[in-house]
Length: 118
Image (tube, rainbow, N blue to C red; front, side, top):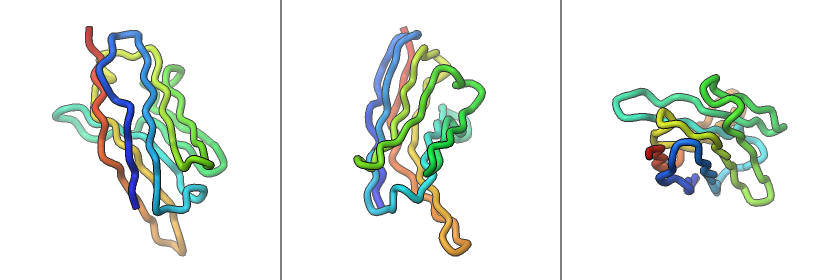
């Protein structure tokens, strides 16, 4: 299983970035996909998730600014981030979760750094 995240970088406040996470080795359409972030010295927190049928969930801090989406044909999940704030600075991780015969499987990608600074 491999989840390859990309798209991070340095952006000014108010700017936008789009993160991508390409998955392989999983049945993409059976996984809930998510983005999490971890700032220095803090725990890893949920940013957004999207279920196989397209239902989304967002952290309150990003509602209205971030959009999660998935492209099953490309086995890729995206996070469009608009109106970025300095407090969005963190390492962002993608995640895939599924439950099969009562066993939960969780896979993580490597992080991609997002820095929001002027």
